[in-house]
Image 1 (cartoon, rainbow, N blue to C red):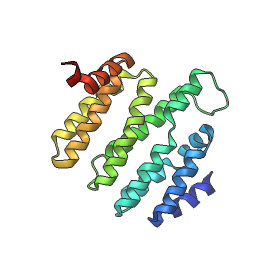
Image 2 (image 1 turned 135 degrees about the vertical axis):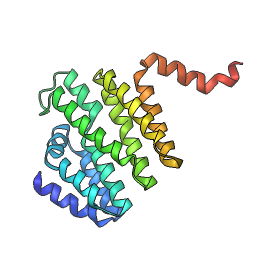
Image 3 (image 1 turned 45 degrees about the vertical axis):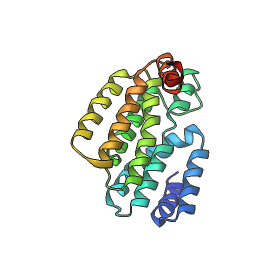
Image 4 (image 1 turned 45 degrees about the horizontal axis):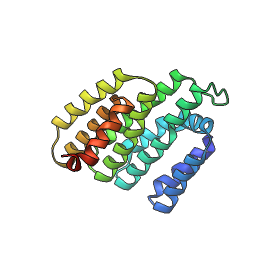
Length: 192
C-alpha cells in the first residue's frame, strides 16, 4: 500500500485533472478493507501535503481523495452486519471519521472556493456517518462549531460554512423528519 500511495502522490501533485481523477477513481474502486489500510498509510502525509501546497487545484484534489478514503456508510453497514472481512472496528471507524472531519473543517476555511466546495461535499458523508453511528453529540458540537466559524468570516466562505452547518443540523433529524421537511419544501406552495 505504501508503494501505491507513492504513485498516487506523484499523480496528485501533477495538478493534471485526468491523472487526479484516475487516482480518485482507483481509490473509489478499492475494497473497504483496502481503503481502511490506505487511510492508515497515507492520511497524515495527505494532510501535510495539503498544508504545504500552494496550488488550489491540488488542495482540492487532496480533499477529494481524503473524502474517498473513508467509506463511512458502507463501513457502518458492514460493521452492523458483523462483516469480519474488513479490518476495522467501530472505534477505529470513529477515529478515522474524526480525523477526516477535522481535515475537512480546515479545508472549509480555505481561500479557494473549489477547495471549500469539495470539503463541504465530503462533510455531508462525514455527517451521515456520524448519524449512522448514532453520534448525536458530535453532530451537535459540529453545528455549534460551524456556526461559530461562520461568524468569524464573511462572504462566500461564511456562506459555505453556514451551508455545512445546515447539513449537520439535517443529519440530526430523524429520517421521517427529513422526509416531511423535504416534502414541505417541495410542495409548500401547492398546499396553500
